[in-house]
Length: 455
Image (cartoon, rainbow, N blue to C red; front, side, top):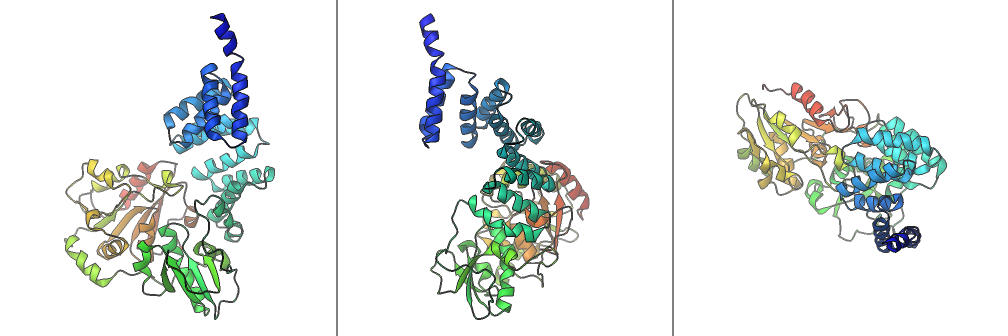
């Protein structure tokens, strides 16, 4: 027994070195296998706990990650990567109050470590402190000027604070975290040259909401004499078929010969947009009249009862969806207001929540009849109000000039700026903002008090 114990003890340092060497050469699988052996030999080895815990976090095994990272911090309180990894895990699992002290400790122990400030910037942004986030990202960049994640974070903080000239100047860093490389790179990029007589391909790059919001920015190019080709995903194509925003091209189809190309989210910066100069000349998307008429029997008008549509989830692929999507549960307090007819418009992600909820008879689920964005657009003219989180549906309602109340998390997107209940993007939209990270219940309480219906 003594021989076994004495041979096990020195095995851990050797295996740990081998694990670090495997990680350095990019062999993650071998490194994790070696860290498992380290942990078997030394159950409190902080490096093994950190590496395996962080791998579990990336794999979505939050229980294992929390156990291992907490143990790593316990046995090695000064191990900065473990503290930051634990803080990130806590932040992403809705435990912001516990994450903050770990980052404060990391700042005290490692003020010269760039990643500490990058993680602090993310925490401050998510919890509703864009000025603090900007400060943290700039401290990170002072220590590590090539940190593209911090550069993007700085850009987004500037944009959210309304400093759009500075923010858009570095918004190109979004490509450093994009899952897809930019398209059409064989075509010269439009960088603000005179547009008259030029054919410019403007192509969608982010979510449906971004495309709907920024499509209006093709009009300055068209008005300046450009021949604009607007590339959109197939699902959105019917909304842009009228050609008002340029000749519509469905993504995946070969573009015609063009002089320049530009991604849609570059236009705000190239056009010098500011929060005071967002163009709005009236609703710029419209529903098909025949479809509007076809939906009328499914949303009958009953005297004295407003028709209110609602949804509760955005695109789960959005990097901030963990914070911006409330889910159905917080909205149930609204549905208890019996003085209205409620219409659920949630499709795809999140719709399954409806089956498990006890709903009053005043709620109608429209999702089984919704086949795409043309149906969603055709429903909106029948509604007196739409209530939705920050999602493409909110943008569609705003672009159509329909009344919409949008639920805004503390980790709000840059376009919604700070504090105001109004947005220059959409005059018909009212913003209801979280006052504390994750507190959807408080937001819904304030929204319910504003409803034009009785309980």
